[in-house]
Length: 239
Image (cartoon, rainbow, N blue to C red; front, side, top):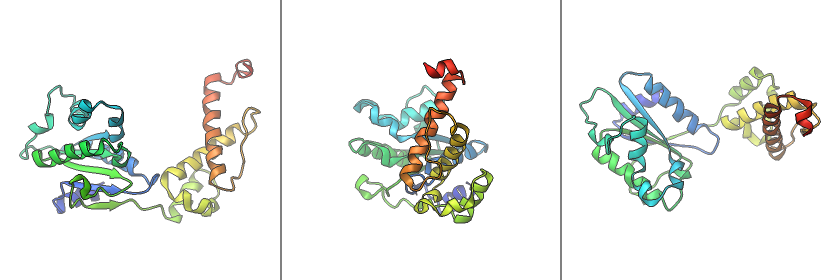
């Protein structure tokens, strides 16, 4: 996070794109970056999930970023970000998560709001996406940072810490090198161990491919929820 902030300061970058495939940790990084910034007196972070705009009316969409920022700052004022000036001691970061998740008919509107923020306020913007934001949206020259997959050593260390064989790092065609899938794998194994002997659930055990891993994950979620709801009572289980 220090490197991220330093990079934006050293290059005078007002906006940065964080790019990566699904499950490589873009959202987790952005949330942790927000926490890191808000722990510093000199920074204030506003985190916004962009897919929230998908269910909004055209009128709501047009003021989406401004409204979400006002909510985050607990401010009833309209155009609260327009009142920020460059001389303030606090530096504001707008963290926009998931540009690729915005519906195609709403992307131009959100991109236009981003342009306005860049033109009319001193805020800095970090946006995540699976695909690079191109000039199609009239946002030009935005530096890109790419999320890398985990190294084999990192995967093996994580597996060992979770009581799993490190050899699994070589399975699933590199799928476990994505942070999200690695945690899914570890969580699935933990839950399946807890519920493997319960007659209501069925697990593959040692999964042979991605499909079996995903099916075991779904079964583990069902088992976890079912056991929480029934609280382990046999009568309720029968019902």
